[in-house]
Length: 397
Ligand SMILES: Cc1ncc(COP(=O)(O)O)c(C=O)c1O
Image (cartoon, rainbow, N blue to C red; front, side):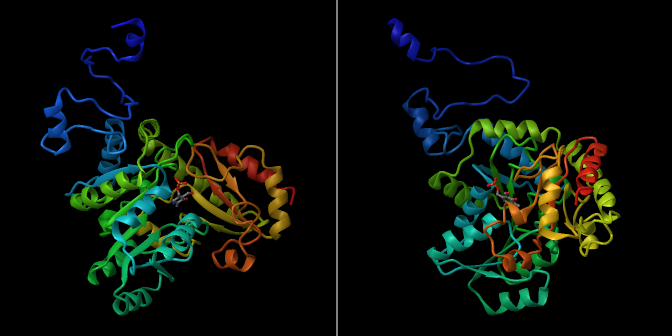
């Protein structure tokens, strides 16, 4: 081999070493075969192995398996998980795996905005309609399932942004099963540490791992899970591979790092959030606090039934509306004004002047987003610093 060729080629030697203590990143777009027979065996499934990075990669699969074990923790059956490129990729890949032209999705009005847009702007023109209804009204849900056989999927979020409204996982999953339909939940806000929807009979779970599962705000990815291994392989894995919604090994590795401290982080998020909610609830410039841990929250009992603790997400309303919201946000010093959630640091958002600036006032108010509403994703810092910051900013309004 000449000098230039030596530079180009990987060394022809087996890459064996003692077992790495931490998960290696397989930064390779494809995998080599020892000979043509091995290639044929792997391609035909006679031998397990990897072929091409979009189909599978050891780093990504290791992390998917970890999330699967967490979501089916304590259950008699193992879950299977496919990691994808974002939370939105998880939702769209799941929908592509279940729905066909003429099918309908039954869901709630207060979904994550991206999901509502996906349903209306991408799936509706493809002939897949969405029915938005109040999923707390179980008689209405049953009526719709009974009378409309084209509803194939019941899709929900609990707790939902920004009012932390919950829906009953068990009741909805039971109704879906009773009428031969499937149910799916976005479990991003809770993570499997706080809520395990498979225990309540839900068929599919999606996550934006971008949030709590990674927890450090440094990767974008998503996960799709089911206890039905054949569905995961024949439908979800195939759609992921063909639509190219696959995760990448570096983001998967970052999720793996985050997962190591999931229990510790979630405990601290919950503890801090309870203290902040209690502080805000007694403040005279705050008219309402939406936190599932407060007995004043309409869904406190339901959250207690299906969640281990109440999470790090909350919102509150300033008595004096839009101007109060703007003044308050301008005085924040410690919390971070960033439009994401679930990170280790406390994130604050005034939806009416940011994420919902272009949404008509009546539309956003129908979903609980009033002029004075502020959303908090409580971090794991020392809670005194979070409360001190909110307290000083409240003095300016
Ligand atoms: C509840 C929920 N689901 C899904 C998503 C989409 O996730 P991603 O941004 O990773 O695509 C988000 C994003 O904010 C979210 O809050």
